Length: 119
Image 1: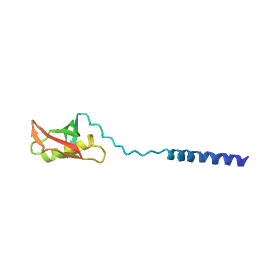
Image 2: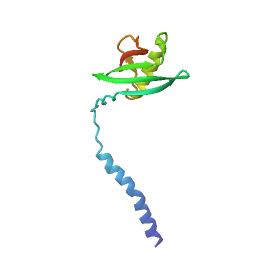
Image 3: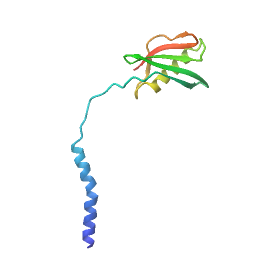
Image 4: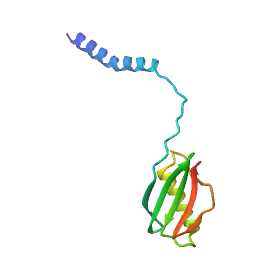
């Protein structure tokens, strides 16, 4: 009787291995990559360098986005670019991508405005 119990346990232990082996035969590899859908327009408060600023992101087609940063002065272009590109990377770019500016930032009506895409 002891022999039958150990044989049963041995068969029971081998069952998951057999199932894994069958699954391995049906593995398919696909090289298809889909382009992620553009992110919807959004407006988010972003904490940056000790203050909270308003960041706006709006898709404009073909993978480009209009960006705006409110709450900074006209002398903070470098900070606005850093905030906008890092925020865009977080909200819109797929893993491993970064935001790349498409034009020179412009300060108008209390906002830094620029366009960028994921690179």
